[in-house]
Image 1 (cartoon, rainbow, N blue to C red):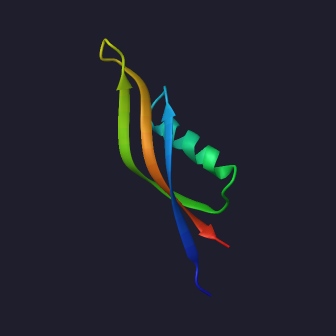
Image 2 (image 1 turned 30 degrees about the vertical axis):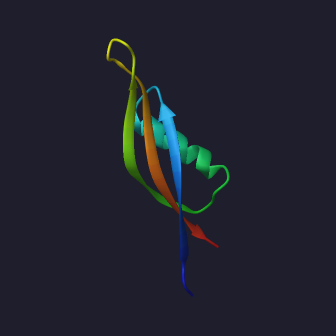
Length: 68
């Protein structure tokens, strides 16, 4: 029997860091999608304040999951 994998693109953000943004995005996706197999972070962006300090981390990622 063949396995079918679907990939969706997700954007997520965090004030703490990249890892937290990824985990928050996967947690949110996990509420409606089962059988998550992995994720590829394909874009990272930061939002800076007037002083140049990072105020928010943003990631775009592709999440793959098995379709049953």
